[in-house]
Image (cartoon, rainbow over all chains, first blue to last red; front, side):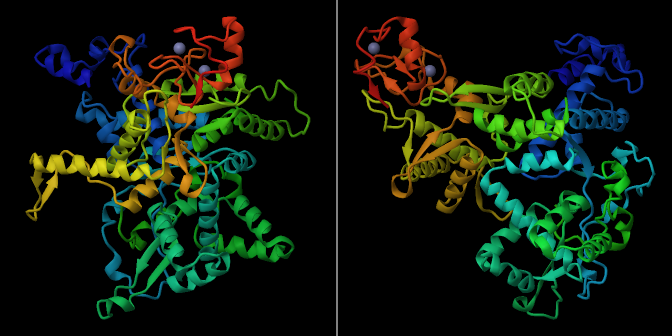
Length: 329
Length: 286
Ligand SMILES: [Zn+2]
Ligand SMILES: [Zn+2]
């Protein structure tokens, strides 16, 4: 990065401590706007970093990869920024990138809901409380009624993109996906629905795979699919590796993963698709059942604020209690 | 940006390439939602206008939607969402791992300079069986590096290549080829045993800087047999991979089928601008 180099070269220059002077050493060809007095970082530089974050978010989404705060720090927040200004810069960059994502791409960064397993899981999970402890250090989410853009940067350290377009527009985009992509998305949806509608909210491997045989998904296909779903955070896999059991007797359980909650957590969309699948058998009773299931796994978005940031940290309040994510990424 | 424009852009993000027909159909659907009516005007479905507006908004992220004419069908156009920072391939093919990217580069080398190109006949497609050769090349390069000792030793005392990418296994490169097709980098033609792998409109649009730098030579430096290098269509100046090749040995003239008629009309002749031999009837179709 030419900029940081220059700063090093200038290090015995007493101007170096005056961050307003970064404008004079910046090689950016853009005409400079006045410095952002709040952060002391040049506005054009902030804009450049925000654009980089937008690119990172968009390209990450192509592979359904989450974005880690640590990675944003490492690759985007310029080395030329003093350590004590980095958090402030990060926040400004995040807010700017979020604005651009919403207004231009119809997307937004949201904290990844935690990987959690239903609390009534009867298998022994104590040994699974693995490496999530760093997450519990996070400040608890504050729920506000307005929900408009508050403390987004404090909420989580892992993000994914969520579509902010109205449902009907999203459907047109979905129709235009490639055949393979539509097929995968359809299968992901069906598997997540089966898990969701199961009374326990999680399912054992052989139970789940049995449901899929009528859909032409045999065991080898199931294994490929489920590993893809796990790696993209649609489902969370949990194994009952009770030390007393032989390896081959260990069971795999699946529950809904963070991405499923974000992508399918839209109550309206979920019900619409269920009604399409069920056809005439879809009735108000089933609709109520779905509502209560969604509530039980904390997926139900409050209808008044379905587009607000306030309703996306589903289940985050329970973080400390749950801590059972397996194989954290 | 309106919701229609955002959704139109999202469609490009997901699809990478849309034909003019697909783009129009998509825009029609979006306008009907926007206007809450089936009655839409020609102005509503003016693709070019929407793209100009979208391009203005995405320019600052190094993205742009470009239009290219199909190499063979005159009324077919492709709109590709292109990463302008794509002169380094890894910036564009972001979904590939390092050794997949390495294989992809070898595949491109084979397509654009492989020995299927004969002095008197270009051939920018490779048969499926050609993948084996790509894999062998990757393996050979890996071995060479190993013999040169470009290795580091890991904690368990095993030798690990520090410089070169481990060759892909058969199942891995087959999966990669499928991925490249899904991401519209390559297209398949034919079926089963006779399947061919061709460069796609997205590949030619997005990797144009890479391809030009790597495979095209200034005219003066062309080797005597002059057949191995990338050329542009004499009419539209974009990369040529399919169409007509002048029949004079070594003549650099290439002409897209889709550009042909317009070229003869404008040129007021059916002859090659370089060597004057007849193009319309005696050029070789490749
Ligand atoms: Zn042409
Ligand atoms: Zn000629």
